[in-house]
Image (tube, rainbow, N blue to C red; front, side, top):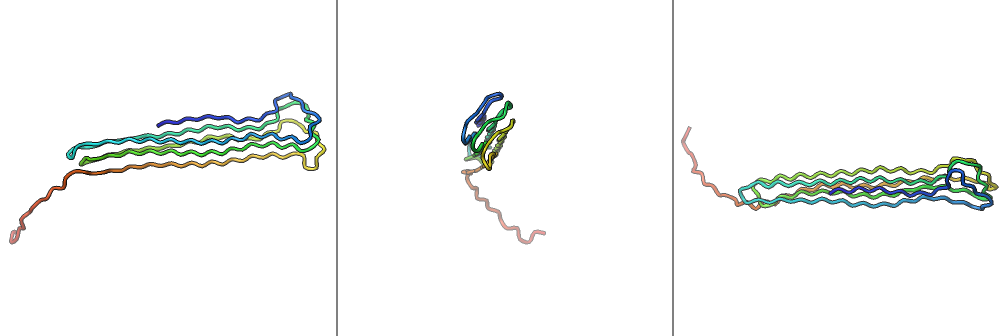
Amino acid sequence: GINIGQHDANALIENTATLSGANNVSLSADGRHTMFTEAKAGAGAGAEGTAVGGSIALSISDNDNLASVGTGTALDVEGNLVISASNANKQSTKSDADTEGAQTGVGVAFALGVIEDDTRAVLNRDVSTGAADPLELVVGVEDDAELGVARSRNIEAPVEAASHPERRGVP
């Protein structure tokens, strides 16, 4: 299975936008993303045959989170200015190749997970404020990736009994 996800979470005060007379200003871009990818394949053959099975699981997650005050004249804020961006990403990628019933079984499972996240809090202009602690920039990122590859083989081929006479006295 193939799973590709791209998400953006933006909180912006655009270039040249004006702001005046505001008390406390908070700008927050918060992204929460979850991706599950699972590939399963199986193969079977008769008791004398060969079973070949394979699976591929690929997850690609590309997420951008931006809290930004663009360029322009100074912002006039009476209180605090808080600019924050955060991202939490959970990705689970699993692949399973199973062979059954054959004398010989070949199972190939491949899992690949890629997380490419960009999380930024940006201030691109001056701020005029009356607050004691006027500015807070916060960036937080939390990524959790899980990869799993499984292969199982269930042989149902008959067991042959063999009788060998003992060879005594033979050099």
